[in-house]
Image (tube, rainbow, N blue to C red; front, side, top):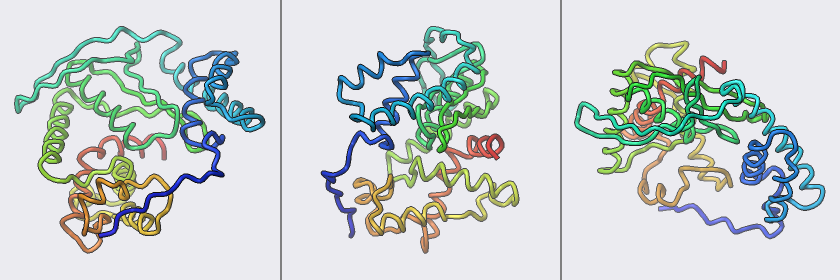
Amino acid sequence: MRLPRQLEDDPDLEPLAPKDGLTRWRLTTALLAHDGDASDALATLRAHGELPPGALGEQASHAAANRAAALRERVLAFTAGAAPASETSLTIELDDGTRLAGSLAGRYAAGLLRVRAGIVDGRHVLEAWLDALFAISGGNSVPTVLAALTDKDDGLAFELPQPSPREARETLQELVALYRAGLRAPLPFFPRLSWKHARQGAKQAQKTSNLRDGQAFDLSVFIKAAEQSDNDYNDVDEFSDPAAAIVWRGRDLSGRGDAVLAQYLHLAASTVFDDPARAWVEQFK
């Protein structure tokens, strides 16, 4: 068994560097809430030690202001500057008797809005998709939009699929069944990688129809992640998560040479992300 090595902190690494992911997110989130002059927000961040010192701070502030402006443009295009409606409670019951209760927040005249002050990955898509399905299943058939940033710091607005109430309930029931299966046995679902795999499959499905039936699929996303894990790349690596490494010890998580695991990797990703992935590919060709 091989567990991922623990990377020690580099004393020469500046945790508040302008390109540090957490610093980017904190600054963008803070500035997004301020129209126009954001000097007060920057002063607060600097006082709390959350802004890089000196020239690095100026660089980070300028970049964050540009990101916040790009994201705010997408938000205003959806909200028209209006405040969100009050949260409303909602309870639905699925055909198998499962009761789901929650509240709808971030609702505007145009629909539901979810904002991510950074690049979208599978975690954010899944959250927005569940919100969309929950709202539609409860009789609120409105669009759900995820506003975020691209890897070039441009704003984007991703509109989640809008199924019928019956289809939304059926999809929720499939997801609940998958969740329960994961409580009984390890589930080969990795939000970031599974989302990438689903998007890749959606692109390929535009050229060949057999991917929709699970007859053929490309595991290259998982294979690349496994190779990176083997080389100890210091990147966001879901395969090297300690829990995953223990649960799946002795198995090649890429699915190479393991037809059963390969099928389950694909099944989990497609069950969760098939519909959003097709919508993403259509909107961002």
